[in-house]
Image (tube, rainbow, N blue to C red):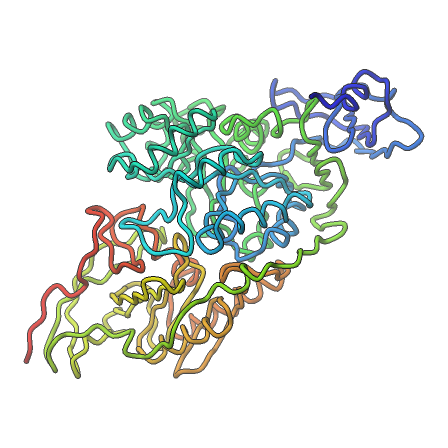
Length: 589
């Protein structure tokens, strides 16, 4: 049934709860800017234009003082948990910057705590100003071959989840699911079509017939474009695109050229951040940062704002809820003094003034956490021998496959073959050759697997780094120059219920506790940023030369992007989609 109180206010039969007066409306439908007021009843907008007749005795009047009225910004694709902030603390960080809605799969908490964990997170968000719209993951885990997790997402879960009111689409549909005819995903796609939910893809580096195949399968939009040409080809094939600028994958400069260089229409392009750190949020902002970047690179302010608002809403077919300042939509309104500079002054979210001058008027407080979220580590005793690669003979040489990190894109790892020494029956990592051991410890108490491989590009000269937050399966990832340090790092995480740690000479140098599912914490953004800096500084003291050591570490288990990854199954060839032996050749001496 329609909200009759809202209808009555629109008709002038009831006063508004809030009136924003004296503003200049940024109309993202028509591309116009003109003087207008906004009348709000409850959480929704009742009327836009002349609203002077809707001011009653109990109406709150907010004088915009000539500011531009901009719709709340929408992040079209973000793994909120990768910020390591709980949803409450994430809202404290991004709402003052004008983000009032995000689309997230909450896939990282799902593999730890299942649908009940997702429900807890969604309920947590519902009580605050940030609207979390849920993209039901196409399948979990996303890994190829499938790794062991706490909870798997398949057709049975989709039958329930796609009926949840927060569900706005089928999320992170990895292209290989279609190419390999994954029956679970195909069934989830059929359900999404029945529910008229858009199918959102993860199709990096797709081209030609592969893009055509994805379009034929019903993929609506993609956030994984590595070049402007790839973005353009997807647009030409009828797909929508989301331009990403994350803390570690910096693609806006390249992909915005689809508009500035190739002159493609921007109305089928949205913005997303995918993965962000607290440090970057505090230093640069969130989606407001992407809007500023686009404007600085030659995009008209109106177009950049549309890409951050209505375009994203239309991609997800949720423009009846968010994305514009218009009757019936959520009352998410930003007051901005200058569209070129795009600094958000005041933020109205869900009908209330919640932030001003880059700060929440009243910081949000997190809810109590259930035991299921706080008791997620099920790991038996860890020993140094768990982090060694046996050679089968006492001494000699071994040629190994060492995954080589790309400095530009943390998801990309290429093949490097290196000769290492075999001592006392073990293939020994060699920091001098930029070769470390990399291991995954299954933490759900199921398979007990602890495979070990080799990694290049981190530059550690000694010590170890470990994280229990590691998309896409959130098993414990660890790299190190010495097995005993790796064991010490993992033991510390298990004892503390999860987190991220740097160890050297069996001593903890820096530690960030992540007690909620082993992946997030109720830390204020400022404290989280300080802890992130401590961790990275400790890693750099040990020789790490990557720009964001832990953000590069946690993505080692992503198998959706060529060429190699490391999961609870072992070293993964992401092209052949199979486990490979890291020891290519060995001979005794």
